[in-house]
Image 1 (cartoon, chains in turn cyan, blue, brown, purple):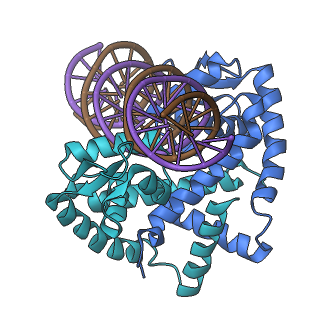
Image 2 (cartoon, chains in turn brown, cyan, purple, blue):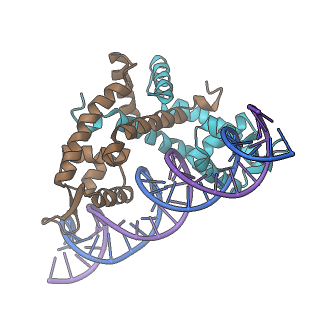
Amino acid sequence: MLKKPEDCIFFQLAKAAQAGVRYWTSRIAHLNVTAVQGLVLAFLADEDRVTSARLGQRVQLDSATLTGILDRLERLGFVERRKNPHDRRSILICLTDEGKRVAREILRISREANASFLKEISQEEEALFRSLLVRLAQGG
Amino acid sequence: MLKKPEDCIFFQLAKAAQAGVRYWTSRIAHLNVTAVQGLVLAFLADEDRVTSARLGQRVQLDSATLTGILDRLERLGFVERRKNPHDRRSILICLTDEGKRVAREILRISREANASFLKEISQEEEALFRSLLVRLAQGG
DNA sequence: GGCTATTTGCTCGTATGCAAGTAAAGTGAC
DNA sequence: GTCACTTTACTTGCATACGAGCAAATAGCC
């Protein structure tokens, strides 16, 4: 085991994830968003008008990172920050009409891109693979 | 399939890789190196005195990223850039004595960290999991 | 009601990661 | 030998990613 650095699981995970990001980026670049921006829009399509803290929990990004991503999505006109009438500390992240359109397109693309990225892998292998990814993402 | 954004393979891959980086970072932080710096040292322990281009191929980092990482490893005193007598364009990345010591320690830790990170997973599952990671990292 | 602890989103600093472009040095066709 | 092409490492600009620390607002305890 570990005869070479290439056998290190942390290296293998990082490189597979990088390949995924490259592929996902290539599929949504024409919408003018990056891989992470596209994922954030997908989460907003699933649950709109959320606080930054709630969104950060679901996308698993810390608040410093999310602030920058939301800045850029706001500049692109896909997202608005609105005041939360129930808590003046927090804000509500809201998709604009344009943002909703793009988010729907991203959801459509993601279905095809998931299937295409995994096309060489059998159903059983894919199920095990995904469950292992989720298990490792929890605690390692 | 893809009832939720959490089911997106690109999201799952990215988050599992992030968990791996967090774990690996926690195991080598006392050596004063980051996750990527530690991996680069592991590759140098396997193959010392290489050109930047060769190292970049093995670690799968582009030259812009690698330049910064080598700058920091050099500042830490773990690595030296030497002139290549056979090609004045290129440089040879060399571990210092201190770098060799740290790299050996990193190799030792990586064995234990790999096993520990995957401890809940059976041998067969691990083998399949790793082969899928490598396959996806190739071309997607 | 008033004080303290927590929550919220932000900024700053550091470290990847990649696209694009550069200067210096080497290679090859003629 | 000369000129075009390539290779090498570097730089710049942008986008994550996170630790640490901040001010404003809220919640909880007395």
